Each structure stands twice: as C-alpha cells, then as structure tokens.
Amino acid sequence: MYDIIIIGAGTAGLTAAIYARRASKKILVLEAKNYGGQIINTPDIENYPAAAHISGFEFATRLFEQAKELGAEILFEKAVKIMDHNDHKEVATEDNAYQAKAVILATGSENRQLGLPNEKELLGRGISYCATCDGAFYRKKKVAVVGGGNTALEDALYLSDIAEKVYLIHRRDAFRGEASTVQKLKEKDNVEFVYNSQVTKLNAEEKLASIEVTDKEGNTGTIEVSGLFVAVGRIPQNEDFAELVELDEAGYIDASENCHTNTPGIFVAGDNRKKELRQLVTATADGAVAATEAIRYIDTL
Image (cartoon, rainbow, N blue to C red; front, side):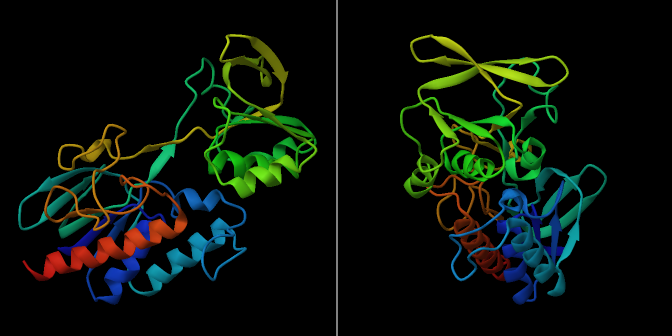
C-alpha cells in the first residue's frame, strides 16, 4: 500500500510528489497522458519567481526529473474511479487498482471547444488549441485567435512573430487577461482586435479557409484565415470522481486554500480546484499544501 496516490503529473501533482517524498512517504503518481500539464505549451515563462525566461517544457521536465530523482513512482495510467474504504482509498485505473492512505487529485483541466460543426474534423487541418505546438505551420499566413484570457493573449503574441496577420476575437469589449500583454499586442502592426464578436462558422474543404464572425448585433462577416487557435477556457477533469468530492457549478472541486475536499483523506491541488487565480505559482503552492495536509492526515491514522 502507498501512503499517497497523486492523480495527475502536472505542476501541482509533481510538486506534491516532491514534498511527499521529502517527507519519506511512499507515493505513486498516475498520469493519463504526458507529464507537465498545461504549462508544457508555454514557450517562455516570465512571471515565475527566480525562473524567468524558461520554457514550459524545460520547467516541466526539470520538475518531472526532480520528482523521479527523489524516488517518486510514476505510472502512465488513467485513473477512472476512487473507492473510499475509510482507513484507505482504492484508485482504479483502466487496467489496475492501487491502494493508499490518502489521495491527491491534481487532474488539471482540458481545452474547451467552440462546439461548431466540423470543429473536430478540422483539428490539425486549421483548428488548433495550442499555438506553441502548431504555430510554426502557419508562418507568414493569416490566423485568428479566439478568447479573452491570458492564454488567448499569449497565443496571439506568440503568433504575431510568426504569422502574416493575427485576428484576436473576443466576445466582450475588454479582455480578462493581463493588461501588460494587451499593451504589447496593441503595439504589434499585424494584430487586429475583433471585439464583441464570436466565431459562428468554419468554412473549409480539406483545410480551413475562412471563418464567419458574428457581432452582438447579429451582423456576420467572413475573415480569411488558414488557422484558428481556440483559447476559450478549460474544462476541469473531475467527472470521474464526482461521487466522492463536491464540485461547484462549473465542475471545479469545491475546496479552500487548505486543499481539503469534503471527503477525509482526499485532497486537491491545481487548476481543477475552485480558486481565484490559476497560475503556475498557485499550482506549485497547491501541490505543497496538499502534500503537507495529506501527510498530516496520514500521521493521525
């Protein structure tokens, strides 16, 4: 039996693994896809204390290697269910089952889609959810970014150095993201803001050729683009555990800064938690707090 099972090998989960291993706890990290989480797609981290100008991939790799060096066991299996046996928990994956005294949910979140016809079919043929992954394919071409948060702003800024033209489409008249990034975009000659509008249709044959954009008055126009980068939010990955942990109306785990869920022995860390700020620094903080609280819980059993 493990002391702690951590579900998710993103920034929060790997930080929790580091803290738990430094406390000599036997831990298992389960990851459904790749280590690193959302930050792995960020080309240049500027706001993390004492680690400015490091790529998200390098940051995540260093974190992963640090956890491994400390003795964290990491398996690439998707956790699908948690069973509460009071004095211990059982985590079922698609192929196996593991037991632990405590569990930390660090499952993060996934891209929210626009929900338009042929959106899925055009993935990789004009539709992308990761500018840093796919931006190079659109060098000297016209592209659009849809969204109003930091991810959308950062995507547009990144693409402005690659593409001929970048349209930044937002359904409101002001962005939610950082003002400093908005100012940088305003200084770019090849970035055009399209306010109070939504993408309502994708025009394509084999590849995306143009998008239809509708403003709040119902007026529709067509913008010719080769690529559309969707950055309209994230969906927390908590559905498989909803029977044991309380979720808010948006699907985030309802937990405060102590990272406790409503079920004793189950903790939460990272972007899948209800919180005011979802940043790299808050993910690492959550991982540290969740691990510390899990250790305290275990020591009282």
